Image (cartoon, rainbow, N blue to C red; front, side, top):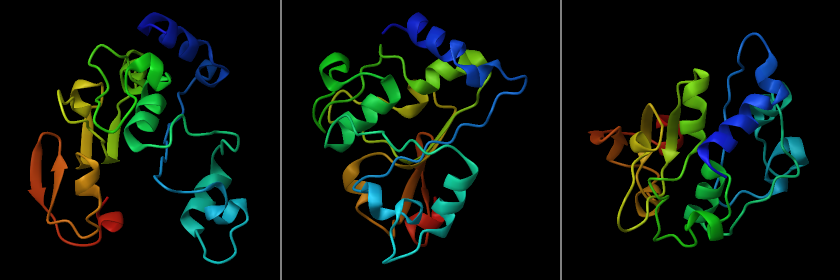
Length: 171
């Protein structure tokens, strides 16, 4: 799917026919199963914030990951392409710079975009969220950094900054 087709399919969606564009927030979690949240039946622990967001928004309950690895599944979400078509088939491969991301597709429609959390870059060559359409980014650059739940530094844009506390609270 090229940029024009991707934009065309977004612009044609009934969601964008409204006078005021909706806010779009996508929560994408590693290693989280369908039944790991209260709104899908979890009783062993509570997820009140996610339950509230689900009640106020749209839950895609028939959404499956495109790949059982971080990088390819994130690339599929951002490009709309399976790894065989985007070239991202493992955790060592970046989204190619010439791929159109969701953030790049939303820009001409007047959206400002941010990536908060983990940008799972490959090994080489590496891309950056700011080069892939995001206006702002804050969090981890790769998976190894994201293993640290009490980080000393996180990335804000292209600069690392000192932080203290639990990563879920900071983000």
